[in-house]
Image (cartoon, rainbow, N blue to C red):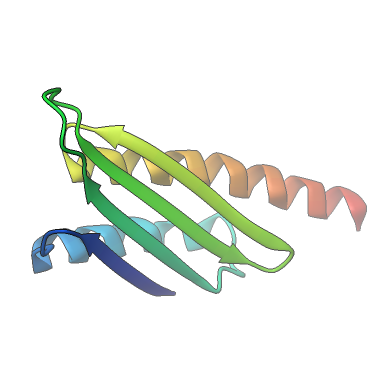
Length: 100
């Protein structure tokens, strides 16, 4: 799967990009028709500790899935996004198999 990572107002290091790629690749075990994923990493200028925003747009046939999470670390956000997308993909697959 092609993963596009865009970091807004900072440069993401290669370790973070590899981590994101590895986590998103696991989604293909739940749904094999994923076209690509767009990941947006943002840092919010607030005094709170949870200022890292991660948005994942997953392109699949029949419509895109979008998840947005705010956490203390990008790794934590990516894990939460992947688990939310996993639930959505399983639900989508169940709907498709029910119609066949």
